[in-house]
Image 1 (cartoon, helix red, strand yellow):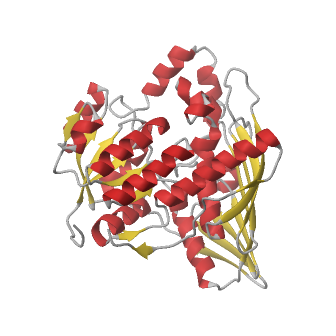
Image 2 (cartoon, rainbow, N blue to C red):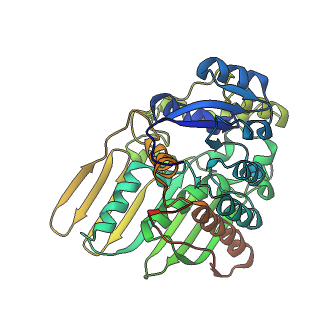
Image 3 (cartoon, rainbow, N blue to C red):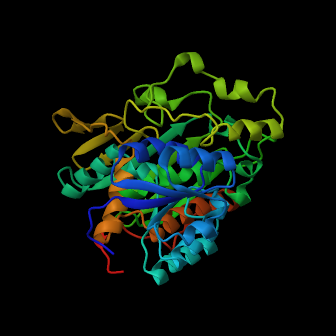
Length: 398
């Protein structure tokens, strides 16, 4: 089952936007071979078969029975993750599931147990906790060179809520809004940098557009075991673009074009809900959308880490270190496969039986923070956390 150098024979559940964003990685990383895909759109299945030579299935149950598939990437909508994880775990497939792990904590518990009972690895990703600069910062922290982490600030202003959305993406109960789609990135990053085990959350959220009735912004304060704390701010309503503070590099690694400022809002001005859903469908695989070619590493907005003897500023190209008496920059080069670190984790799990930090339990812990932010905003209270886990790279016997 383990310790083979052959490419991982991967099936894909869902050929929508999430798959499109992983496409460059799958095309450029020889450690993965796409052998099957399950998707409801015949056009997407046909495009997959033509490009990769794999088999297309109209439902995940059929793909789960394919003996050639040894691992799956679940890239379906959030509210479908739990059902699909249960199906593939029962079939003995290792699983990479897109963030968030699930929408409800009950589903998260079921998914953790499903993977454990089946003896398969379940990795939650891609998320921006896999970004090279974030992982390198974690290595610096673990080295102890600059002492303990005391405080982290994470900040991101985008127009996320005004990009094309399906109706369920604007309903919180179905995993819509910025928390489940975007906040979980920021939470993952901060937890990785601060050791994982958050203790409490205090937060406020914003629901400020009646036409898009879900959380579009939040600010949260988290404290951690060991005494560190972090502030997280995200706006999907923004007119200001915080990528300006990230060397004008977009989230996915491309350079920002000033001529496209306001493009998202302009595209929605004349569209009703049905037309918006149709526009969203043009971003799926097989609809003519080509993923951007990254010129830089991906990022999730400005991150500043205050340690005892230095402050670390994360940038797409590396890390600025502001020490006691000198300043330095550590370059973090761009990989040919943009999300190589995700495949690193998948390969280590499937081929070497080594789990990354971003396990099912990790995904559940980040989801708990999402719900705590909602609860704190509703009640005005500090919300204690009970389902957290630490940062660990470990060998597991399955």
